[in-house]
Length: 365
Image (cartoon, rainbow, N blue to C red; front, side, top):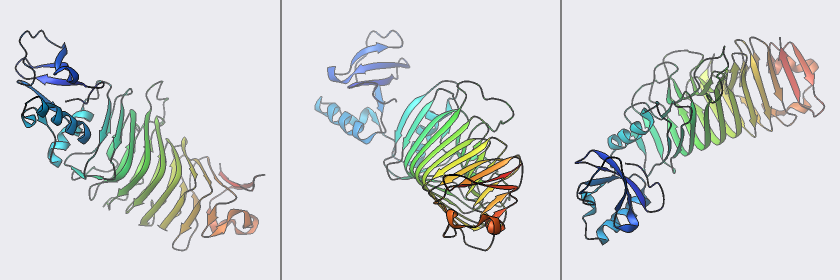
């Protein structure tokens, strides 16, 4: 049940002998390779194809019918969410071996289990939601993500990811380890483009609950042209990992602690944001805490809808740099008198450095 390996070639399962065959669709499905010796295979009498790509499916069915075969006898196409759930989970379940897969959704998908998961260092999984949404009905406890990448690479684009009601993080990247170097080839990477990422309400007040968290030194998240909405908890959290944001709109709706749009911690946490729109309902928009981290924001707007500081620094060796064109509640950084107005915008900064390019850097040691 694999996609064609090359033009006109397919992997199929031969049920009677329980083996995988490689067949050539351009030569009446002639057997090119068989994983076991098979002397008397009759093409399409004992084989079946499992195909999820709608274009491949249509072409394959037409080809089979043109040869006088009833295509539905040999082709399996997942039709329900439960069927597709099984297909997706089989792709992501085997972490013992590397996998390179591409999935294109043809409709909204509700998974009964936790969502996408990558766990082999050499795996590269690409998911194009094609304008559709992927949700789950199973709750991810505490910090667990609906989408988890402990090592390997996940590329996801063009749709909506939503966590189950009462879940923790929507997307969790990394192995959660920060005190040792992850080692060569052990990194976890997610590349997000043109997505909506939504987190739902949770009962716990955990600092790690986020729409997306990069946890551990092996974690990297690159997010472009995306909207992030956090009903509870943080928007983007670099919990020791590295996050790069470009043209991202982040809105958090949680009042009180842990409702910031961007946060960094664990010393090595780092967020770089360019061209972003950040709106927090009742907490600082930017927060560096715990053992500290680094945040740099350029050409972006920061808005807090209630009274209070927009940047909070509450722990560790930390730095926050805001570009000259960044606006804080509509006021440009370059027009603020930081000698007299620091405490209006920033909490707990030990020093302020006015850089030559008009940006400012707040530090805490």
